[in-house]
View 1 (cartoon, rainbow, N blue to C red):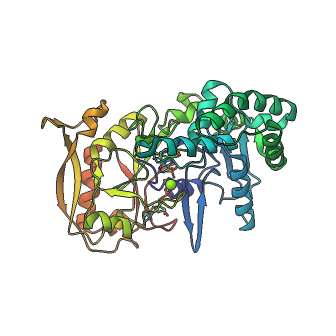
View 2: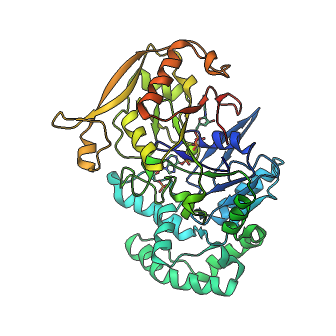
View 3: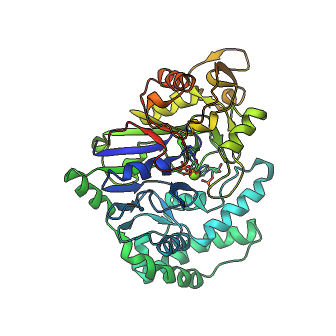
Length: 427
Ligand code: GDP
Ligand code: IMO
Ligand code: MG
């Protein structure tokens, strides 16, 4: 499978970093196609824990080309800090490439993200406050600054002057924040530009050539389907499209080049930030998931909300991205629960049974889950490496999920470690 998209099937933090790292061992290129440093992708390699935000999760394999695609948004300071942190730990960044068309997160984007969340008060989205939304806004408004602008200081200053004319009014008049001088912003940016310039490249061409040469390319999604700006639980979403289709626009290759879509889902559900979550738990089972799964955000450290696996939402995610296989992570976390539950349908406010994800937010907000309950298991799964190693009840749980979503589960997570998996993926 030369071109595989790896994408979150839930509200993010499904374990995409671990899955991409695992498959990167067998791939020549890993490309991020959307999102920015709102993402936090964890890789546990032996005693070492890596938390990647923008750098693709293939970077631990020397020789694997790592592309930050045009659909991403790049905070130059945050990226420089991430590169420095990795280099200090002996990771080579020689194979990193940044699309010249990727938009840059400016300091005013970060300021506006925080200020708008404050102003929304109890209606806030709970963003990561990394400036993601305001940066994508400027991209769409055609006043964004792109990576390639770092290569031409004259154009950079001119573009900053234009962008800041309007932004300063908003910062000052709407939010009571200080105005920014274009020359100051440019000076800070150019300091980072020195560092980033060697990485900036025509990444769409690089990926095309790799595919043409029969190399294996992974497209690494950030966030998850339910945070997709078009298909997620709007407005409690991120400002990009995590769904698999965006791997094409976000890296500059055509849809006919994609061979396989691997969705990543936890064996339960978590969500950080605000917004509806039908299977959310506030009981011992939820606390078990929080504690055993160590469910605290990789980027912001916030406690993740936990709940039972939602098969209605999972089927929706499979459909939206045309998933051809699923990775089921963190199955080990459910060990020790007496009973496990799967949400097989929703009931709307009138009691009607829904098995397709409702398109109308008012209906969705009023939905309650209908569960199928199964016996749990006590066995520690951390040493399981094949389906035969799984205790029968865990196996029944996995089979019930695969049957409900009609997609094969080709990878199962049995622990945090990079090789704690049952791996049947063909990349
Ligand atoms: P991502 O954003 O999708 O890459 O996921 P995060 O890294 O934010 O969060 C997933 C967390 O679960 C990380 O701490 C991973 O190390 C951890 N993890 C991933 N897969 C497994 C697994 O199968 N079992 C356990 N126990 N932890 C896992
Ligand atoms: P990874 O790639 C989980 C959530 C935020 C908030 C909403 C909008 O690690 O799975 P934003 O800062 O993007 O404007 O915030 O999206 N969010 C994530 N939740 N994992 C992520 O990334 C997320 N990136 C953003 O918590 O609810
Ligand atoms: Mg994460």
